Length: 328
Ligand code: LMR
Image 1 (cartoon, rainbow, N blue to C red):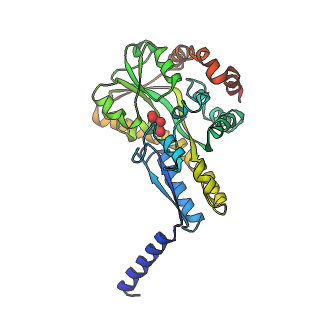
Image 2 (image 1 turned 180 degrees about the vertical axis):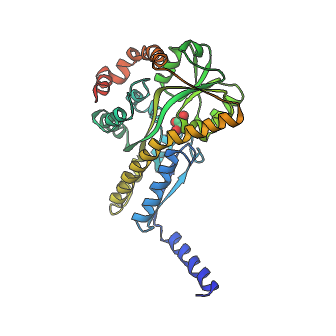
Image 3 (image 1 turned 45 degrees about the vertical axis):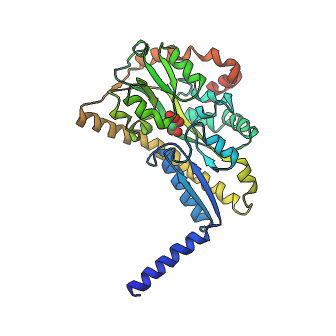
């Protein structure tokens, strides 16, 4: 084949693959493409393309490009976006019980966490999301959150008087108030500049968000409190799904199942890899110090933060909290 024919064939293939897409799914999220959520979303898009032979195309909009916090759920309702992957706190006003997953020190480890999410408690929360007119798909992982600020936070008292950015969640608000700090709700897209300009003094993030959003450049200390968990529920627009052709539905669900496995695997590997990068940054820049806590120091944080649980027995349900804690 001559070069001209090769180029013509490639162009024809490209054009036909573009023309062949009969349906478009707009997927919106707020983080970098190189986070577990970002990679999971791209993997889902690729698998949908493969499984539907290009008939369904998923377009991924990362970094709050299309919709930011507070806008994603509305966009799903209006059918302007079709899939979103909000973190648990972003469901607070729709399903307040979802705040159970924001409770500090609720999850003992990742095994416990997955057993809770994939079991009765996770299903009960999904049912509530469904009842509010969304299609609740799968739970995805980010990781355990730690605290950053411009000082070490070895004990809860160290956080007293500091302003911390939080997602919109009453549990997170109470958690920071319990240690004498001042919580301030801000969308994720504004955290970097808020830290840079001193609008807030600190934040809580999993390592992937901390590093990919370059928060390490605007904070001098990262203290590994691992006090809470950041995870996601993938949700779809109900009106969109109702109209979506039945022939493709099982393929979308299949692609999501595979993407969930992939995303969770990436998330479990990501913490170590990202910590290595943060350590390297700390070493070469000399501008960041990482503090690990002893089990005794962590226990002091746990005691201070866990004191908020009774405040949420009504909103979340004491029974649901107890059920989650009892999961093995
Ligand atoms: C945040 O706002 O900190 C997170 O919800 C961002 C994300 O989606 O990981």
